[in-house]
Length: 214
Image (cartoon, rainbow, N blue to C red; front, side, top):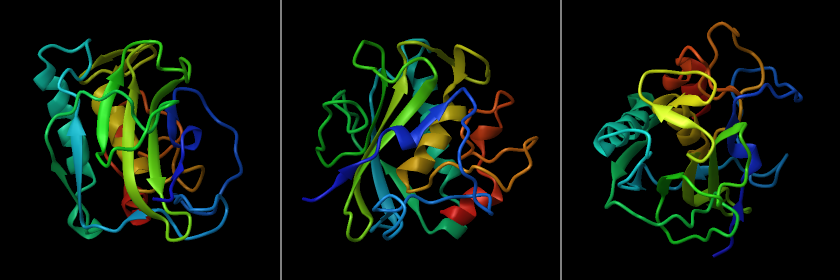
């Protein structure tokens, strides 16, 4: 199956990024970089699998897992025509978003707590979609969270301590084909797909531009 893997362009960071801007408040990924069809799923219902340990910083794990489930629910607004279904848990850590990771047909999410995380401190999460460069249809997209260099929590943002939902909602946006929003929005009320995680936890909830992009 022909596919490409997108890594750094789908990473949420905690530092500001200088980049060319667009005239709207959302951006979509294209299958051939600056051209080609937009990335999208050929399904109305997308399944995902969670690593049962979630983050080692949050106990019990069910609290962390529920935050990721709630993050998927944020993108299931009626206007999007897209829904998500949780599948069986997966303990696989060879994710498409990591160096050396391989596709297995399952959309997996996991916190990486060891040296297999190679993206550095300033990257909080990375999404690696496989897709057809001809049609833009996504066949798999795994999400890895930086559990090595950051502490994770529920309901608290800040440097070196990250709210699960504040990052997960953003990464799921990449999973469904959205890119970073670089301009066209009020900085005091940033969209989920802004390049940085909002310390006031506003990244938890997609704005109208985020949903318009989807």
